[in-house]
Length: 260
Image (cartoon, rainbow, N blue to C red; front, side):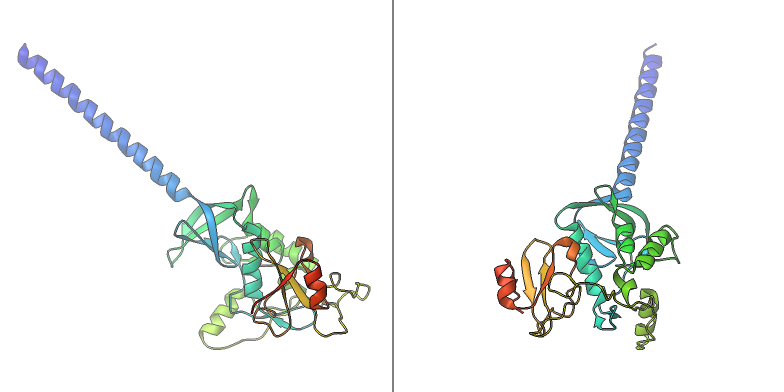
């Protein structure tokens, strides 16, 4: 009887241990799935389609932004650093707000290929819809409608000429600059205002327009022609940025001069 009771107790204990182990494995698996599924927190913008959150490098899914060293042409044919413009736009969009990225895959470089959201807004789609990136059709068709809308509205890179980022990378890897791809045939609106703060490229009697930029931290800084960042800074009037014709005008409006 004692042996029978002892065996029954051991069996019961064994089953309990196995059940406990199984339960722990399920919980661990569930926690791991959650950790791999979403990466969230404050983001550092590396370039127009790459973020770092909590040390994890993230590649935005289905979109392709111009590279940091890439040059495009604006509506008047003037070259500008479109890759830096895309990066700056994304940086300003996110600011200090937390970003949540749903990981879909890992790429060959170990990056988390993700759809990232700022609140409920899809940042991948925002980039394409505003002409800061194109749909990466090789991997996804999700953002083709957004690209078509940006193209039709001549937003961002679609206002002038650019080379598709994937082609730019291929050709520059071989040391070739490659031809520039025309985005659309576009002539500036002749009825647009020609004053500082109105037209994207105002005519100032004093020389090139001064660019009143607002940083990601909200600081108002103006850049004059010849300054280190003048050519790469793009002005977005919708965000409250503006142009000035004189430094005194910029200073009076609350902007400070860039130190570089």
